[in-house]
Length: 386
Ligand code: SF4
Image 1: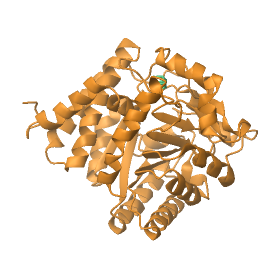
Image 2 (image 1 turned 120 degrees about the vertical axis):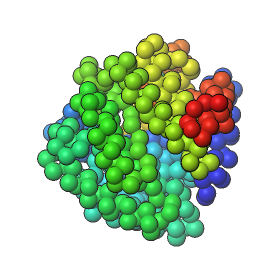
Image 3 (image 1 turned 180 degrees about the vertical axis):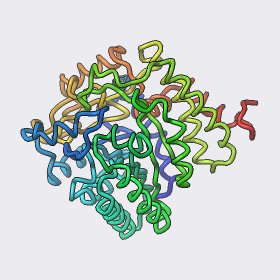
Image 4 (image 1 turned 120 degrees about the horizontal axis):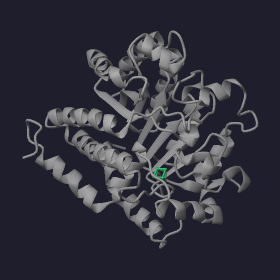
């Protein structure tokens, strides 16, 4: 599948999401499925406690889903546009290529994305190669993006991630994945920073380092307090005002280079501009500034089979536990528990700037989508709006 063929599927997902939102349709047909494939992680991040808990054996009572269980779940869900792998550390799962294989067969994603802590460079490269080769054997060139985390340069990175030597491993991972980009045009290396109070004063240094490596794609997202990360009340996020200043700079950077980008990249970059705008408003006004379609346009499958509307609500507001209802996603969403959670979300009982979710929300909000289209056409070659 090419990227253009993938984009053509989006209107179908959007119409279906409206149908579900207004209760005309019951069946789940999300744009994005995020799947935390494992609870295991070797990191001890200051912004997330999954690693520490997994190393202490806190998830022993909730083992990772097996391949057979995953197959049943994917079978009941059907196609998604975006298969977003999460963790723990996804590459610790030795059968990760088999998991992705199941997704390719049963979910038919147009894009696959995998983040990593970059602590195991050789297995990361090996698994990626395996995934790409398997897709090629099926005659598929599904875009695969792998995003190592970079939260600082040198010792700052090791401090935030809680593992001495992590930065050296990150550098090795980048070298290996850059070589993979040469072998597979459908493979994309992307670096990502979680902006927290620990690195807010070092963002220029990180960005300069990323550009010095010649890595084309670099993404930032704000550190969030999420049920998923067991970090609620930790105060890791910078204030809305500081975040606004940082985002204004990122937005200008995007505008400066927008006209140089290929048409499809321009689409995602203009979408990102709108997201930045909304994220600041959400943080300042502390409410859903446009409706959130969490649990409809996006679903999150946790490692043990719990189904969430999003990772922010996670354990606090699960839709269902799929191990208890024969791994049936459609039955889960028709259940009373799921209906209660969806009512809570659609009554604007929660708010957050979760990037993946808000990209979908923009697609589903005509005035915001119109702004994206205007930005696409109105940003002139100097990056200023005409
Ligand atoms: S607003 Fe945030 S917390 Fe609420 S459902 Fe949407 S993504 Fe989840």
